[in-house]
Structure formats: C-alpha cells, structure tokens
Amino acid sequence: MRRIINRRPGRGGALFWGALPFLVACAGYGVASALRLAENPNDKLLPPLSAMVAAVARVAFTPDARTGDYLMWADTLASLHRLGLGLGVATALALVIGIGMGLIPYVRAGLSPFVAMLSMVPPMAVLPVLFIVFGLDELSKVVLIVVGVAPFLVRDLAMRTVEMPREQLIKAQTLGANTWQIVLRVVLPQMLPRLADALRLSLGPAWLFLISAEAIAATEGLGYRIFLVRRYMAMDVILPYVAWITLLAFASDLLLRWFNARCFPWLRAGKASP
Amino acid sequence: MSNVTVRDLWMEYPNQVVLERVNLEIPSGEFCALVGPSGCGKTTFLRLLLGEERPTRGRILLDGEPLVAEPGPDRGVVFQRYSVFPHLTVLENVILGREFQQSRFLGRLFGARRRAALEEARGVLEAVGLGNHLGKYPAELSGGMQQRLAIAQALILKPKILLLDEPFGALDPGTKAQMYELLLRLWSEEKMTVFMVTHDLKEGFTLATRVLAFDKVRVDPTDPGAYGARITYDLPLTLKKAAMGALAPVG
Image (cartoon, rainbow over all chains, first blue to last red; front, side):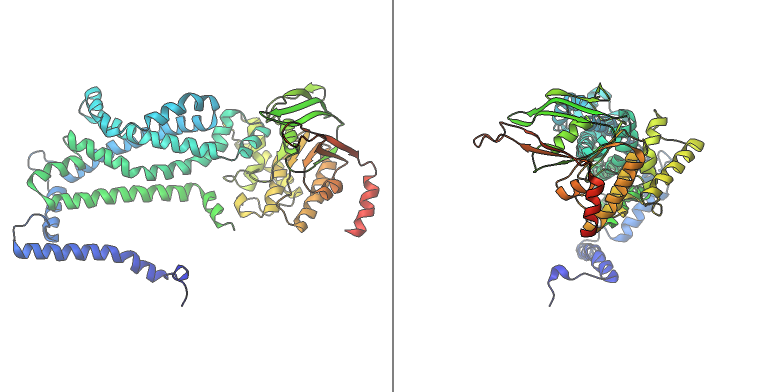
C-alpha cells in the first residue's frame, strides 16, 4: 500500500473529486428544500429550483413594470461599472506608487510609512466620511473600492519590486539604461503579471466593498437589489443573485489568469525548467 | 585604452574594515583573477570597480579619470546568477543594450535600426555558441548557456572593462572548460580588461595574466572586523603561454 501522499487521481478521477462537493451541496439543498416545502408549501426560506427560475425570468428577461429596464442586467451593468472603475484606478495607483516605492529610495523613504499607516484604516469605517464628502451617488462607491484595495496593491507591488534581484538592475545600468528605461523595459514587464495576481486576490475584497456600499445607499446594483428584496424575504431572487455575483467574480479571476498566461509566456517557461 | 589605477583604497562598513590600503596599477588588456578566502573583500572590490559602492577612502581611476560612482556602459558585468532578464528571449536580451543606447525614451528599436541590432546580436550569439537558441527564454536554457548569454549581452556594447563575479561557480567541470575557451577567445578578440572574482585558484591561474590574492595581513582575534584585507600577492603570469603549454598535457 503506497502512502497517501503519493497516490494521485487520474484525469477522470480529478474531475469526479472536483465535482463531488458541488453535487453534494446541490443535493443537500434539494433535500432540505423538499423537506421544508413538504411541511409548508408557502415556505420562503429554501425555495425550489422552479421558483428561482421563475424569479430569474422575472428580473432578467421581463422589463420592469415601473422603469421598463431589465432589472438584473441594469444591476449588473451598474455594479460592474463601479467595480471596473474602482479597480482600474486602484491598479493605476499601484503601478505608479508601487513601482516608485520599490525602485526609487527617495519615494520609498517618503511614502512607505504613510502607505503602511493608510492601509490599516478600515475602509468601511471611512464609508460615512466618503458619503459625506463625495455624496451618495457613484463617486463614493468607486472611492470606497479604491480606498479598500489600492493600499494592498501598492504595498504588494512595492515589495515585489524590492525583491527583484539587484543583479538585474545593475546589469541594466551597465547596459546604459537610464531610470525611465529600467522602469519601462526591466521592471514594468516583470511586475505586470505580479500585479494581475495581486488584483485576482483583491477581487474578493473589492466585491465586498461594492456590495456594502450599494446596500447602504444606491438606486441600482446587484448589492442594492439583494438588500432591497431582503425585506420581502425573497430568497428566490437573492440566491440566484448571489450565484450570479459569484460567477462574475470567478469569471474575472479566470480572465486575469488567462491574461497572465497569454501575455507573459516567459512565466510558463520559468516553471517548465528543472 | 582602459588603464585601471587604484590609489590607497579603503573600504569600511560600520564595525568592519573590509579592504585597507589597496594600491594597484592594471594596464589595459590585462586579465586579472581576484582570488582569496571567502569574506576577504574580493567581491567588494569588484563592486567598487562596478561603481555599485563607493570607497570610504582612496580613489579608483579609469584612464586617469575618477571612476563614475554608478554602474555604466563602460563596464560590463556577469554575475553568478540573475544576470539575464527572464522576460526577454535570448535575442531580445542581447539587443537590449543597443535599444537602451539608441532609444532614450522608449528603450525600444523599430524598423531598420532594430534589424541592424538583431543582425549584430545574431553575430555575437553565434560567437558564444547560442546561434540555435535565439527564440528561447533564459529559463529554458541550461546554466552554462545562461552564462554564455550573459557574456554576449555584456559584450554587445564593447565595454572597456568586463567584470565577472564567480561567473562559472555554478557550472559543471565540462561546461567550465568550454567557458574558459570561449572567454579567452573573446578576451583576446575584444582587447578588454577583465577582472574575474573566483574562489577556484586553478581557474584563476588557468585564465588570468595576473593573479591578485586578497587576504588579511593582520588579524585581531578579539575583533575580527578590526583589520581589512590587502592584496597579499600580485602575480603577473608573464610565462602564461609556457605555463599553459605545460599544463595542457596534464589536464
């Protein structure tokens, strides 16, 4: 009998073991829902699949009676717009400040204590401030995502930049590079995939901040909708929304991973080496 | 021309003297091996020549002019590791020097100038035996091939001085022998001054025209950092050809 650390599932095996928890969760929900519904056909806590399909058909494929919008798509668009804007600004800040801090000693000396302190401010605690300063509409939500995510991205990128072998920077200088050329040709191309990875890790927090902000003050958005229909205990809407948000987050993670694999072939070359 | 003159050089760190009273006169075209026990300042001396660090006291002159105190294109370098850029292919690694030189803002060449640089790089890579690996990334090359690439990359700008920091330390004996041959050929073709740090005495004597041995002359047993290393032996190997001839049948 071989040790368990040496036994590996085959292709089909990996697929089976990967699918198992999903199947168990779905089956568990189905059974629990059927049991509750058998007791009380009007139970709202664990609606059957049919009810969820009907709810999705209502919010996603029927125009809203009051506004004429397809609610789920309008919500998705609004949320993705805020998220994209917030993450975009945070990424740009990380690139400029992170690489600056990592590469230029004066920038590091000037900014690193400040950024370290800033990153410890709980973003949700400053949300009221953001609402007061930026108003209740789009800007405050975007700023919350930036405030929540940018310090992490900046610090991560600064650390990755500092970790670059000094040999590479010396070598570039002996090839006659000025600081700008070093940034452009040596540091930036090697930091972009690191940044994409950091961005993947910060997708979770970004959604958290987005939904929190939408829950408190918004007129559309995925988070807004969930908290709105909570008043009617509309689990048949909430659960598909949660699944949809999860799917969107998963897809953006996949997209970033694909971006790394596609645009930086040298990363894979590194892993293939002995 | 690339005479290197070192005058009364001291290098001190807090609580530690690394080098003391180093004086040297290296004429152009010399191949110097820096040998000595670990921690005796050979690498520090190389870093001073590179301009990565500044001496505490004393001066280094290159052709009579004080050395610019930061790394520059007149001094090429090959380290033991991490000398090449992992995100560029072999060919891109080598043309990088030309791109830095000719495109100050973008650091990238296009069109005819890029083709010229590529042509030149192909020639240099052919000379170091990497002609068949132009499109590979460094991670796909063996250790010896990576060092060949690092040398090719350093040579494209025709530096006056080539600094080598244990460049063959991580290579197996067979590969080392090939690298010696390559390095000696390039050195005689390019007429540059070479400084090579090595902890392998035999390597030093095989390659160099001059061996500089670093060691501490004075040691205070209660305070090991009190005194620094000096150049204890400065051996010009004028009979190198004869010596090499004598060595050849043996090994």
